[in-house]
Amino acid sequence: MITALAIILILILFSVFGIYLPATKVYKSAKLTYADAQAAIYAIKIQNVSLASDQLVKIKTDLTQTQSDLHAMGYLKFVPIASWYYNDADHLLNAGFHV
Image 1 (spheres, rainbow, N blue to C red):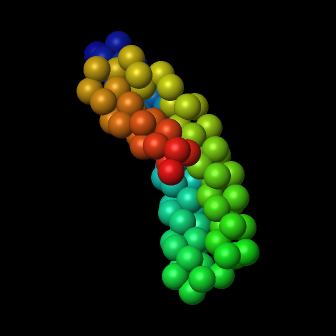
Image 2: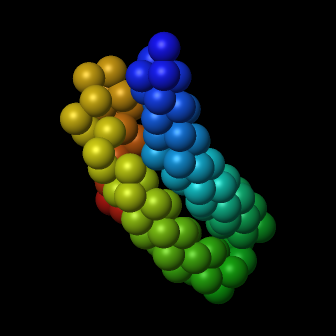
Image 3: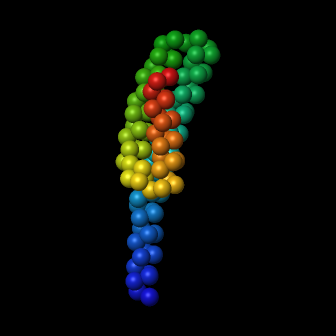
């Protein structure tokens, strides 16, 4: 009984500190990147080249931070189903750098 409770407690702690908190950090970084991308699109629509250029620099910085936050969860590469989502997110961020 005590062993089962200990295992459940360890799984809960890993879920919170190993998955939820890092994923929340990645999500916040991604939202910031998205907001800056929307600002860049707006700057392009109003044909403000200097503002668009500044926003593109910010986007690259934000993408780098988001990628760094995601790579902090690199251990998910080795979790069978979670690895699919991790790899998709990593490919998405890499594609963002090439646009």
